[in-house]
Length: 144
Image (cartoon, rainbow, N blue to C red; front, side):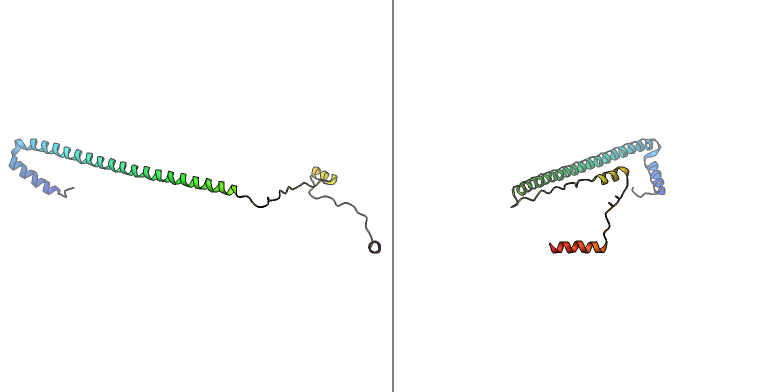
């Protein structure tokens, strides 16, 4: 702390022994120890008071910041709610059509396939037509 070496302490002790004498030296050492203890306690108390005061100041600043954030949040909520209410007041010129998807009627074959667990439906059997028959049919349609 004071950057005093052991040899210097020995020299100071010898000088004190010569100046004070062997009878008064122990009393002076006790008094110096008491004063040193008192000074240390005083310094510790001052440090503790300073740190608690700094904590109080920091807490006061944090409370102030929290209050500002709360006020900003309220302003934002009020602005957002007024904006949403004004948007709800605006009406479009014509309402959007309401489309509903209607389910197609299921055929009996499709229902059977679903029940049996098959993935694909069997193609219905149709009557095969020859090329001549298709030309004949096409010609009949065109004559009408």
